[in-house]
Length: 293
Image (cartoon, rainbow, N blue to C red; front, side, top):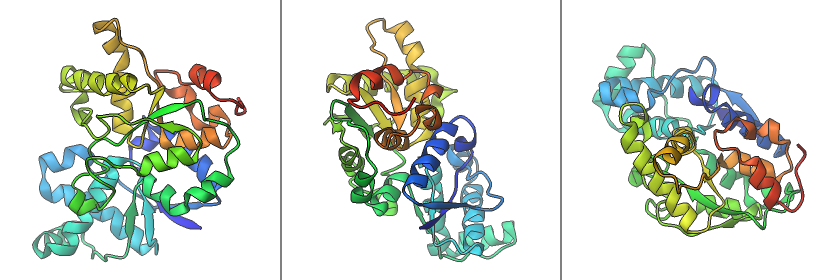
């Protein structure tokens, strides 16, 4: 199976373990990735606060390139990239005025032939049964809180992905890997996203609430599918611990890493050593058959 791939900026920088772990897992699942040639930034959280035209044009440029390569399906692992690509595609398809302006700006024609999916949709498309066939590690003692955040599920009428208040698709994948998915309250609450630099105080409070709720519901770790969410929930825990001495540090890992752990992929290849809160000690204690270290 061949699939188009839009890594986006984060997966080549601060979230490179997301990229590495996804590639390792898809290799075992016999999925070939074809990266969009000469891809560029989608604008993420900054473009649409600066210029609406730019926020549509930047993702459209990548969609046009994907169409030229004949890529009918493209996975965008970053939730922000996924959200912006789908939003741009919708506007280019249904708003003739904005499409005309964008095509004039980028000097190219838009053709709507590419379906953009996020990482959860990708694994659902591959199928839980195929994933189960590759499982080598017993994760039955591991309790996980699945965190979706804002951008994977909203706006629902545009993304058409799961229930925007109580999504379940990630839990289905976690269960297929043999782990237990806990029920909790804040799986779709905002972590503060791009306010991480400008308003660290707000992001810290939001992240503390999310982390506390996961722990209160007996989660050992949190599983995410968004680089920004991971950055906030993982990196901000040191500050949270300084300000709230009772805070229990909780590992935060990507969905692709969790699936890779279940498949027995080398921890280093999955990038588990790159997180601020090291998940390895907990994993070594919880998994019943160790993956190769």
